[in-house]
Image 1: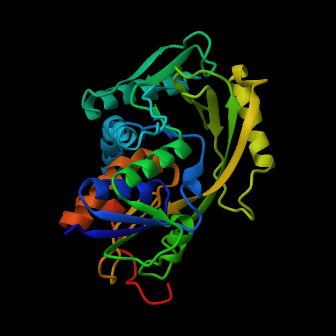
Image 2 (image 1 turned 45 degrees about the horizontal axis):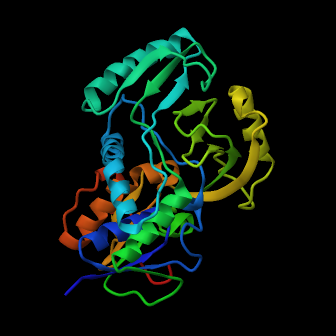
Image 3 (image 1 turned 180 degrees about the horizontal axis):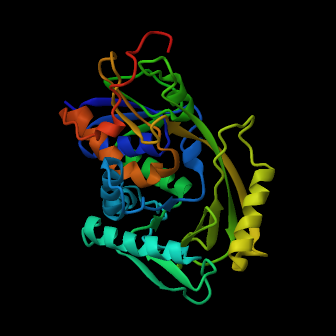
Length: 346
């Protein structure tokens, strides 16, 4: 008889885990009163960019594994559900404005050669004509990829349903239970010192009508500028620890101005969407994954923050292994055992 699994939260972690569980034969039900990708996962930027290849740690290694498995994983999502998630590994360009940056970039090229297993490169090269971050030399990495967050969540939802899963606004939980409930769920968790396990950080982004679908993404002046396959370019985002609403505001205007100053080709492009959302940031800045201490049969997958979509394929697979097989392949830096045991009313 198939194992029952209930997932609270229809963002990328919840839907990704539902997909991985369903592929292993579990009967899954995703519960979210607001629907698919109603929170931070309903964004528009989708920069799947690696950490720099230096000061290596288990978080960076986990992310590398996830980025390398992403193409096949998202292709399986697309094949099963018949919906395009907007994934493409088109790489990324970053400016080299001075000699110190160039020296660090060359050192990191050596790090990438040693750590990225020959699967991608980090190089210093002349800036290409046209689409460029505005310096004569750039860093090009071939590991970065793009995805369209909203479409990726729609693709996951379609794949879950194709595997017999349900996505509903409300229901009683059955079987194993996974909580992937975004920033509010993360903030409600407490650590052993009675501090919140994390908090929400507001981000804002814009979508422009500009067709550069085959071009690499740019990272310039602290902004991700991501050409999507549908003839749009996304740019963002802010990181606002203090906020009093979740709507786009004047800070997004500043983002647009900075992006156009850094990449003049963006100037004059029509802004077709303005987005804001609250992203879940764990205290450690790493995802929070594992069993819910003191709550038998309950699990947590939260805290994707800025790297949730890049981490999602491996997060989904390790959580499915933990829930169905009892195999714990979660890095110590991500573990939930530092949380206080659950008590009624949390």
